[in-house]
Image 1 (tube, rainbow over the protein chains, first blue to last red):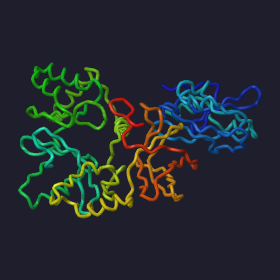
Image 2 (cartoon, each protein chain N blue to C red):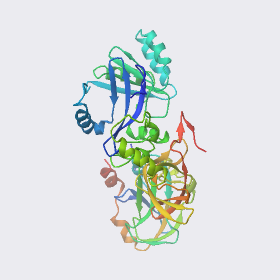
Image 3 (cartoon, rainbow over the protein chains, first blue to last red):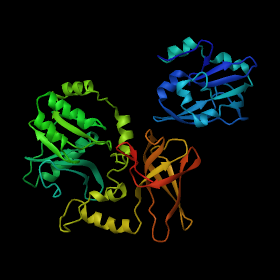
Image 4 (tube, rainbow over the protein chains, first blue to last red):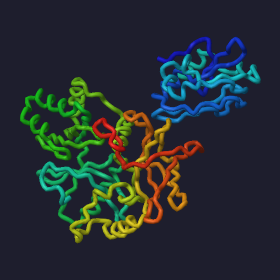
Length: 127
Length: 303
């Protein structure tokens, strides 16, 4: 059974987001997504400093089974990237919501956060 | 088939068309009563149609055996588990016989046939038996500790072992020489006129001159996964650049890096391959060329 923490927002493309106190957003892929992908062996990390639009492709997660594009759930600037994943991509399998975070975005249009899914809606979609 | 001297012997071979394209790859077993062919399930209909056409002129009976099932028991403990299973049924003489089977040999026990063949690069057997007995034996094997695997895991194993998969690494448009199947061809005696021979002889000369592509192994030590269809860019010693393509690729769980089979342009006397790179999402990642075959019996086999 996948885990869908209540304090996060979700995109239909299986990314999660957490609004931090400083107004930035941390994101990764959901527990459900990592389960579907299976053993993750490589992550092409997003580019720090890049300004992206919502739904723009920013990263690729490769598992033994498949390569899956990761999309920016919101528009903004990528201000931090989890470099630890370069050597330990499997962290996304073991801790998708904590140590397996992928990047932090400084939103350019915080209103976009309202368009994302809450935990219940996303969990319902994953059934 | 002349290589199959005695009942129980098995042979891996290609079924060729007149143009020397590979219709299928298969294992032929010599039985006391004739030959048993195990072909790919996905090519069953075209194989049967082709063989029926070929046998029409001969005194040969071709019988499909849809009532038989195959269970492949593979891995370091496989022999031991299958022998225990036979012993538990009071078939101790049969267990001893299975235990002493050499690779690519089998033995028939009534309606069962057990052979030291498989598609994993591991020790083990394939058990061919009446399909109504298969579910019970399956359950007994699971109870004895055998783990069931799906097609994905089986595909990883065969690729680690460097074995071809029909429809990916070769098909009717591909010469067996360009599918690393040259070793299966019995060129002698020279007057044996097997189907496709004349075309194949011309291809052999072209292959020696470096005019046909080769199926090579690829190893990527950088992080990532090699996948079927990716472009392989080969740089030759004369500065020329030619493209090949990955025909099967995966991440090797045993080696912890990407491995693949790829059809790449051949080198010649004047120009050898100096560098190979795989195009992954527009980035050229260096790969090493190795002989097809990456893992056998759980151990790395290339340098």
